[in-house]
Image 1 (tube, one colour):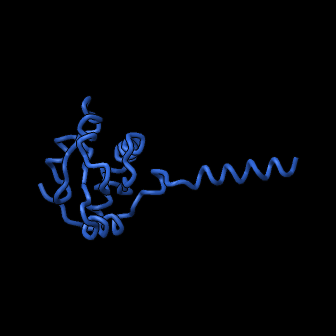
Image 2 (image 1 turned 60 degrees about the horizontal axis):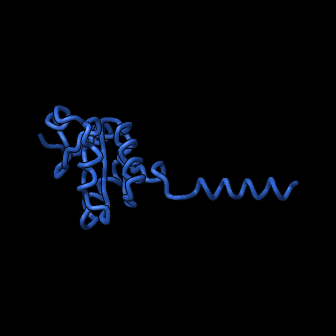
Length: 127
């Protein structure tokens, strides 16, 4: 019985140690470094067009998470290249990253705290 419990615990640990969305959350400094130093990186802002117009990261493409055609628009993003995704505080971008992983994206990185954290760190945005 001890061996069975041990095996179950080991398997549970292995299941939790795979590369999940939660493990791909990046703090502002890490996100900025990846944005500036990763060749071919794609930057996606999943906020509404109104939020995007109020200020966004330089070079970001706006694909509204709430749009009915979100999935078809995301499908146009290159799955073979890294994708950085953000929203206002991190909720929508986490959901988008999860959806993208299920769609076959393997390099999705989510900005922890969203653009609010970016702004709080004094990082540049454009309108």
